[in-house]
Structure formats: C-alpha cells, structure tokens
Amino acid sequence: MTAPDELICSAKGCKQTASWQLLWNNPSLHTPDRLKTWLACDDHREHLSGFLDARRFLREVRAF
Image 1: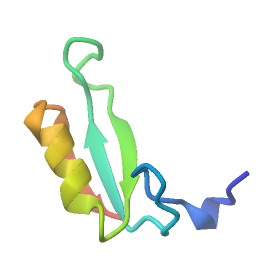
Image 2: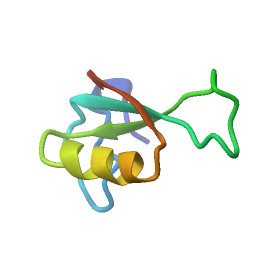
Image 3: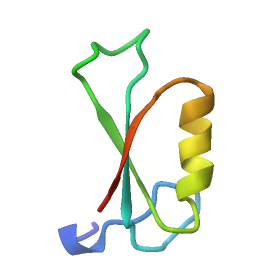
Image 4: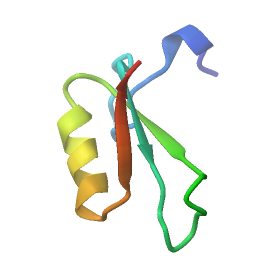
C-alpha cells in the first residue's frame, strides 16, 4: 500500500513521485461535474496530458 505522502505517477511502470494532477472526465460516461484524477511526474506530464487531450477528456492540469 502506498502512503499518502508517496503518491506515484499514473504512467505505466513509473515509480516516480507525482508532482502534477491531471483532472479529466469522459463526457460519454461522466457528468460534467465529475472529475477523475491521474497523477503525473515531471517526465510523464506531457505524455499523459496529450493522451487525455487527444480524446478531449483533459479538463485541467494542476501542480501537486
């Protein structure tokens, strides 16, 4: 189990500490007020943001 102060990047296989929150939702599944969160390290922020943005799911990126 991961301790709250050891939140890890959501990229597959990554073990780095997250420093970004990617807030997203899939409009065909979620109401507009429902936001899901992926965590990202500095190395994977652009890749994960691009993946979500290409599908028009990305709503906001916040420093963590």
